[in-house]
Amino acid sequence: MRVQDLMMKSPKSCSPTTNLARVSELLWSGNCGALPVVDASGSVLGVITDRDVCLALGWKNVRPSELTAEQAMSRQVAMCKSSDEIHTALGIMRTRKVRRIPVVGETGKLAGILSLSDLVFQARHDDGCRPQLSYEDVMGVLKSIEMSSCAHAGRGV
Image (cartoon, one colour):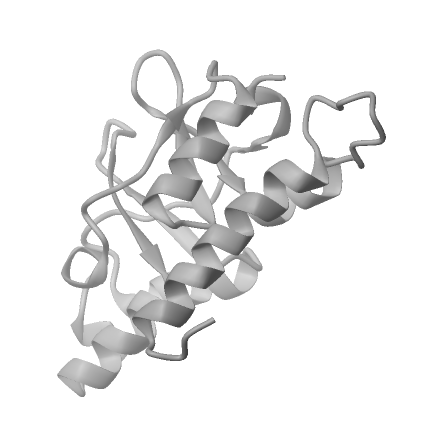
């Protein structure tokens, strides 16, 4: 099973100069928690999450229209290719501790986004006849991310 079979195609995105008011609007209207930040040619420059927006606004104490995506986005982007095998993408998510990753095509341009939430709906139980994507695969990644979040926040596990 390939990433292209499960990714959300044509995701919402923004440019580095998009202000955080517009970013928030895109996140809300798209019912999503992250947007790829792309240049004019469609190359991924970063990712901005709803959490990034909240933290940037709280830290800077300014109006959302006064900050841009570029000022709040994460630049160290975990990505995969649309042609990657799904377990390759899960490995990237586990290693980088992220719930969503932009997907690029063979030309390196944004082609989609892959989220753990989407994968949960495609996963099947491992009943001895291993499915292409099992609940155990997806939940293992989620558990790894959550354990890291708890340890980082000082909550333990």
